[in-house]
Length: 512
Picture 1: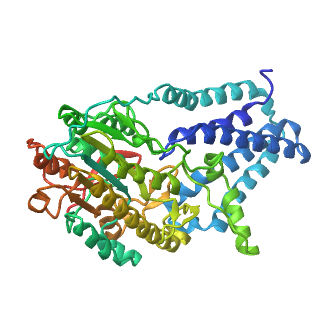
Picture 2 (picture 1 turned 180 degrees about the horizontal axis):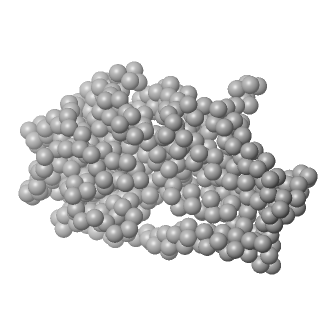
Picture 3 (picture 1 turned 90 degrees about the horizontal axis):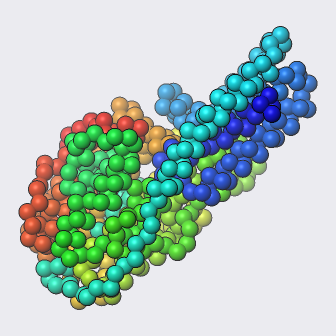
């Protein structure tokens, strides 16, 4: 059995598990299982097809391995090529041609190896491939074992007072500053801002984020500290950010003041769970995703389908790079926020709303649409990104107004409400699956500023007096809680930093 050429199949599994373990937005068992089935099915097809081609049968495993690599590494090729060579590889036809011709050349090159017998190294290749598979498999198993249990809320007496109102924090993912919404996307949010002001919100003119990545911003927001200035984390920095978000200074302080923590799980890794929450409000449906989406998103088949559909006028569906919230989940969570007024308090509610971030699931009138996730912000889909993002922003504005209006009307004690974007858009994504973005030096000044300039609005008793126009997430909770609770949290200089997804804590400061 050791001499059986298993390594093409093992490599197919390794490519899938590595991608799943490294996904920028997390993973699901449904995706992992489906992706493994698809990858192994393709390996079987490749093995069968190579048996039909006239060749030295000893080379059949190597040719099958080439077919596995052709299908399993295409997305990586496009992403890396776009980083090194610019956006011309974002054109499906060009990328497919270059990639396929390259592998065809490798296949033809095997004809020159007639004197070499690959079966001599079959055992070593099998063992090497098995070792490769074991590494991402161990990572996925460990992550599954660390999955926390959901706590049960305890029965408590309602103790809301004007000095201890509910504190509701809603983070709107990827919501650019109104200036950029108007200039880049043609969206005028003035009526939305006026409605918020009419409800008692203060909207700063020049709010800016501290970091360009969600997890870093949330960790800074909830711990009122610049996370890159703390001790260097041991291991994965993203897991370190998840721990800072889960057991944050904000949670501890508010719990010490008698608050219960209400948490809304998402499909995003760092807000997927919270073992310290008193109330967990999880959407009863499943995240929006696709069976086997990891393998499909990295394989050349979607690109081949798009090329074909441009020729014969058919529809080519995009593959989601990772599980996300559906339109129903977004609406359900906002309805639960409005319903917090009917529960016992005081409550600190933290909702990371994965909107107006893609996939685009709403039109401008909040009608549910077939979800669309453009495979890149650059190249041929740039205009589509502008159109769909503008529509989703318009809907999010409507949903937010409905939510906060209902929450305020139903609350006996006026609630403190924080609306805060984690970062703007900026149109910087090359490959959302791996978090690969356009390098900072290749971005225009406008793209950088759009990513850093954000929407924010705050409602609490002293907001008109204490909110400053250039406030950033690191100072939001000190600003609010010093006023609401009478504490003395430190206020820091507002600063903004850029970093690459693969090295999130190696930051470059971006001055105003």
